[in-house]
Length: 510
Image (cartoon, rainbow, N blue to C red; front, side, top):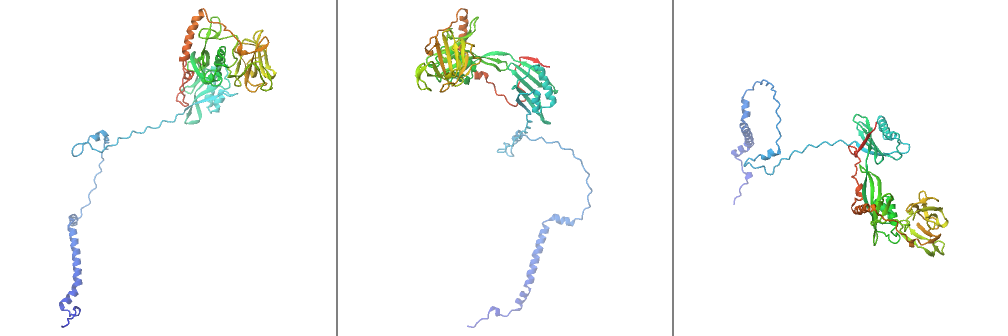
């Protein structure tokens, strides 16, 4: 087999040699032709550019004249209701799912801060109204006018130390350190008030307001918790009315045996009230009832023709006896009458009276009308008072903390008058009253003494008493409670106008 020569070793012909020589030239010609073809196509696809190239350049245009246009009228805004009525492009239906937000209302400007305020001041020792106004920086011209007007109202009367002065003040933005007095009022008595008020022109007027006073009947209900007097005061009754109530009850009620904690009582009071609601008298006792375990004791105030006020039961019998059963609102009997071992001396001796335990300061009442035979310290009795009622009968009261007003030897006292107050002076182990009853100069048991009724209502007074009794018994259950009658709506400390009370009578000042 004969070997064939390799392709690389084959001899090249003239044709192949020419192809090899012109191949780079052909490649370059093809690339240039493709580039020129692309440029031509891009040029033909933009005829505007081509047209611009063929047109000669235009001459510069003349400037246009300036035209002033009228201001267009503002278009009214489309309301939410108008917009809602438009239909869509297809069926005239409401634009579902699309809502216009209604315009929000314009915010109201905040009101200016209130520059009025009330002020209550009290006159101290050595004070004058003008000095008091100077202390709160009232301008001199204003305070001199106010003091002069007030002086014209008071004339020669002087204001007492501790008197309160009510002011309505105003602060001016341009003068924050010089407040203005709009009104000043002083009420030294509940039925009389002095007012100085500012006019619009800057001057001041003064007037005296006089209020009418009328009675008002109220009731106080309470439960005994401690002494009967203090329980009544806590419930809203005045102390003087409770002392009268206890004194009227003490003729018929054995405070030691019958009076217990938790028992209920009611007192009917007659208050004096001004036409603008101020109480001038806290209440005079008209009637009262005390509900004991087995009975209810009622007392009614009544004045017979030609006589004095007294207390009676609903049957018209006077509650007053010759002597009180017990001379105080006692909590409990701690020691009876008779022989006993002395708590301090330690040996048996006669206890010549009875001991009532009570809080220190509890009032002690005279058991009957009489004359003070002794008042002062008396050995182991401590501070001691002895009353001589008749030639045969006397009562004694020991261990007092202090004597009652005006109690001294030789003074005449009335039954139920306060002669002293519970204490623990002398030979005493704690606050209590030692009470003795003497007949013929000898001590006897006070709790066993029998005393008859004094008098009854009769004649022409009986019908009047019965009508009054029915009225008071009904009012003990239906009269307004003292807390409800005296309650008034709370007053704001700052108000634009001073409160104007009822003024049935006015007396103008200078």
